[in-house]
Image 1: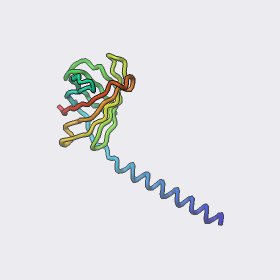
Image 2: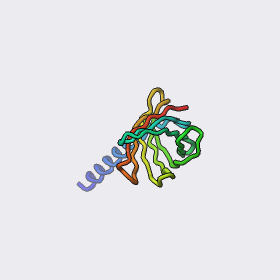
Image 3: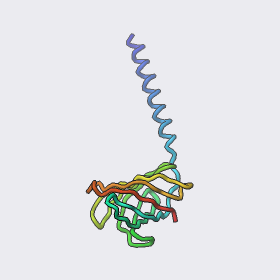
Image 4: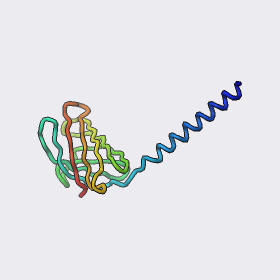
Length: 130
């Protein structure tokens, strides 16, 4: 009985591990490096421009204009259909999460953002790869 129980546990564990491995392999990562420029709209209605450089080693830097001084620093992770940026905006010392979908052959990134420091500061964004 103990031998059967042990065998059942080993088989269950091996099935669990193989299922997790398959899940990881389906999260394909695509190259999204480059400069994205567009606009954001806060929930209060204010709009502004934003530009993000998605760089090597998943480093992200942002500015309010193309080629402007970087005021946002952080990182990003992505799959072939989405990008999530975790950044710090130096102007207001706040941390933001931007969650976007890649659209139009991965040339457009659109989604939502939230200020983790001040959660009432949230909205949407849309950027096009330059």
